[in-house]
Length: 261
Image 1 (cartoon, rainbow, N blue to C red):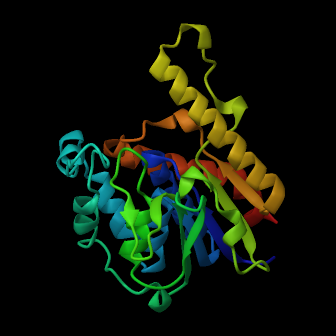
Image 2: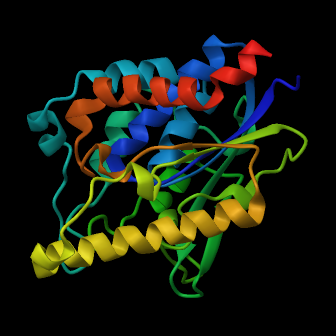
Image 3: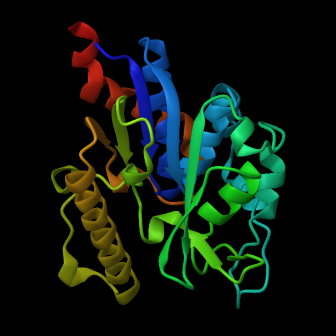
């Protein structure tokens, strides 16, 4: 059995911490992850793993409280995004370094969205922190990144919430972690009872689920680990220990048969 893995890490806020649990399961069971492709929270988790610091990131995340999460929010001018996003990355440097992507231990790709040209922007060189900062820039939440050549960069999940198409080692086992779940994993919702904001949110989730499913159907990863989108809220980083444990469980449930062959 092939044991080398290209791991695709999707976007989805705090539920992306489940991806640390997936990584732990894979490494515990003898798989060699020699490529990570990620967007949004997946770009951060992937960078920590590419530098061999995923365990340290997990330990740091597991200590977060609601108050600590709030203190990481560097509020800015709401016209450009409620949060600047710099405080999070500055704190992250206590966990892993800002290295040139081309010097990282394994193949690493981060994906952001260029709103000016309405296309993906792929980072495979340069500062990993610059790549993460662009990739996590949730529109209206984090301040967007404007490049020297005039591109307006926001969260990679806007156009490509599960960037399977940027895997380079196609001969690997390709495993994708979908943070938008499957319909059969979702709690039934009484849509006629939702207020306007809640209905907008559920419509956004439905759009993301459809984009992700289209990506899976088109690019056909070998395995997909589906994480229900309602497993946590976008800011529930204070539940990181629970989320890592759930990621490990979902990996076992979806991939456990591979180690029994």
